[in-house]
Length: 120
Image (cartoon, rainbow, N blue to C red; front, side):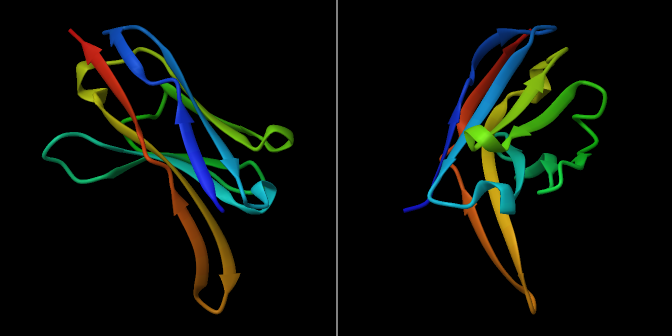
């Protein structure tokens, strides 16, 4: 059974920091690209950051310069360090994992999400 479980959400004041973790089980973690997405009330789910199996990362526009994605394959864990948080970062943050199988096929999974609230 595959599980992606997020930890670390909470309430923080603007300008503060939070570090999210996503612990994966039931998958060969090192073979998966991993990512963080977020969804604010009334808005579409958007990319925050992704990190591929080789450790290369890409950031969404809102995250550049403030957030850092990383992974620890030995611990089956992905992280998102968020600094200089703004009220507009308030959202549910979701962990995502994807493995490309070739021929257009893939396996992908979502976590249940963790709430991040930034007060002004």
